[in-house]
Amino acid sequence: MLGNLMNIFFDGTLEESSERQVREATPDVTEKSSKIAKPIPEKYEKDVEALRKRYGENFKTGLCINLTLKEALEIIPRERARSDAYIGLISFLKGKMGITLTIKSQKSKGGKL
Image (tube, rainbow, N blue to C red; front, side, top):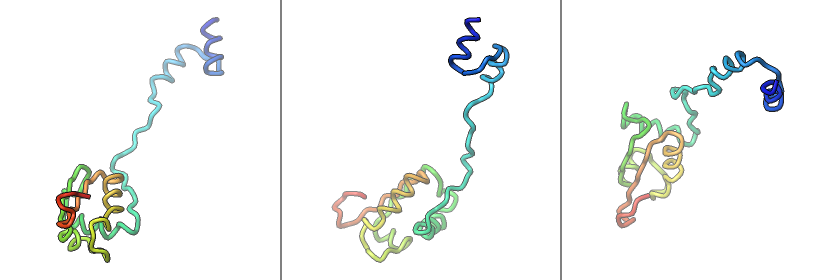
């Protein structure tokens, strides 16, 4: 009786203990497949495609890419020839794809972006 009152109080329903055990045996969380392709924003499509072409099958989560500004401009051209022109791409690759892109400029005196 006390167990039934507790069930009504906490669940709002009256149920038998065997039904409760069956319900608890099923997982509450559904697993998401890691193979679901994440959409790439239009402004980064060409950049990501150029990097995929350059790094092939190695272009996946966990990859660290270290480039000089000169190399970056050859692979991923920008109108503004400065390392800060790649800030958006760097944060997108890190946040959504798990890829670290580091671009060093000779003018930055050893600092990295």
